[in-house]
Length: 282
Image 1 (cartoon, rainbow, N blue to C red):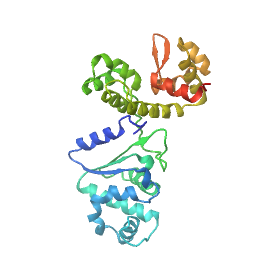
Image 2 (tube, rainbow, N blue to C red):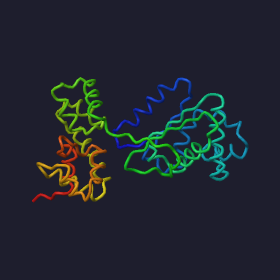
Image 3 (cartoon, helix red, strand yellow):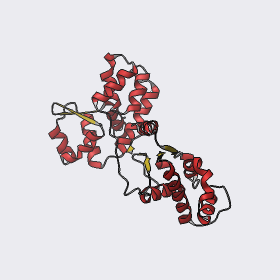
Image 4 (cartoon, one colour):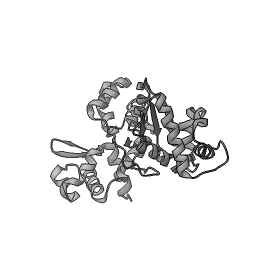
């Protein structure tokens, strides 16, 4: 699963774990401060299975124990990966496994490599792996070959439902929904602030929409700036400014702009971000 911060990746992983009644669930989470610690996330994921280490082939057991800090370092990366895969396969043969890895962009490269190795090769055992990746950051290893689900911002109906469940005054829900741009975290924080866009909620919105703006190419960014500065911009004009209608697509997909009756309008938080980044005031 990929998506920006606050889009709901962790919540979906938690929901998957809660619904996996017949599975043994293994968890790991990338932590930015542990990014340079080899095999830190692998140890977290495999900790519930460490009692099975003695059943591994000797070379794999020694290599995996050394990598996890449970014995002297011995064996190469292939032996470590093979040991981890063998351990997972043996456990899955007794009970299906669901391996959940959150914030894979901060998982150490050694662990991420083994997660990808196991996910690609263990096709004949009941092992299911779901990882989350924060955009626009990158995973420490290539994840090609894994099915990708990109989480888009909530649509208006879903955003309204979330705000209604928060208990926010109905008269404020439309304004809050517009400010949040479909990001669940911003919606919740704005609702918690009573719809007044308190300082914490404002900072969250600026950070999240800043990441969206930063991920745009130059054409889409120019179109967003023009739309943000215009008081009356229709889709045809916006497309001409962008050098083609395809430059508007990233803006619409990420909820940086909205189209109402043929008029293209900036999402309010996004407009504030792009103006602050590109317009110098005297």
